[in-house]
Image 1 (cartoon, rainbow, N blue to C red):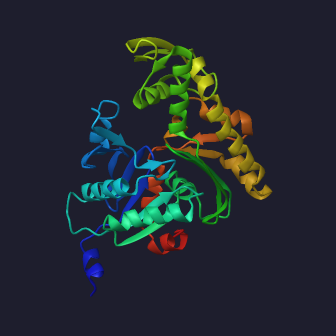
Image 2: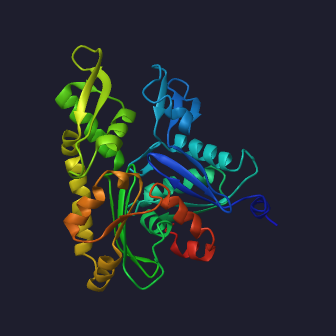
Image 3: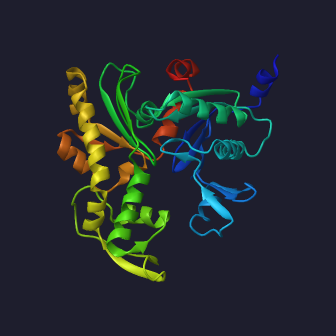
Amino acid sequence: MTYRSLFRMFSSDIAIDLGTANTLVYVAGKGIVVNEPSIVAVNRKTREVLGYGAEAQEMLGRTPSNILAVRPLRDGVIADFELAEQMLTYFIHKAHKRRKLIHPRIAIGIPSDTTEVEKRAVLDSTYRAKASEVHLVEQAMVAAIGAGLPVTEPCGNMVVDIGGGTTDIAVISLSGIVYARSLRMAGNQMDEAISEHIKRKHGLMIGERSAEKIKMEIGSACQSGEPRSMSVKGRDMIYGLPKTVTLQDDEIREALADCVNIIVNAVRAALERTPPELSGDISERGIILTGGGSLLRSLDERLRFETGMPVLVANEPLASVVLGTGKMLEDFKLLRKMSIN
């Protein structure tokens, strides 16, 4: 018996949604055991890690000059190899209650357009985090599985997974992807658009967390319901003093217009490239939205209007990718068949 085989006796297979904004970890037989921001707090001078996940997020925008809150992933791929590896190790150990001899088999969802270099970065980081076996699967496929779509049947299923760094669009049939596209346009870019709009129109600097809160509270893809407004605090760009402004939902909708249009146009392009038989299936079953970005108010209405198709938001949009990846752990033959590494 090899050392690796021996270690597997003490391991539990896990699925990871290694997201730009959040990382979720699913342990076979237990469900989702970790759901934390993909952030690491480090000392600028020594590179010593001071906190991970939720602890590091509390430092975001509030750290002294010698502490930096870093997102090791950018646009769905690893931007800082060393910190990504340390963050993965931390989350894996946390999922297994700090047991050091754990060498699990791991399945990870990645964007459809990930390059070979980017795949290698994810694989190397995960193996160095003490995994015994690593399988990469396409996010759109596992998001569809997590949303409950019948991906193994000979019919068309369409999923739009809007995460923090990427939007993955796919048409799936018979356990295969007929069409797939990954956009570097998602929740983080929406937050940046809001920050830039407020800076330009109101001369106010705000942080990442404030921009996200604005998006969730008064952001929308089209006009729907009663007008909304909210007050936001930040730093005046001219005088450098604290300042509060009141924002209206129509100006935030305008700030998000370009981001939303890119996603809408990509969905329409996917439908245009879908075989006629599968298009008929999609018109009956509808387009399924997953990911945190799908929670943008009235986005489903906007897509319904633009495509003429039924559009539904998954029951657990934030967890669809990790739940789908977790389901694949139940059938390792299928997982090995569908892995893209």
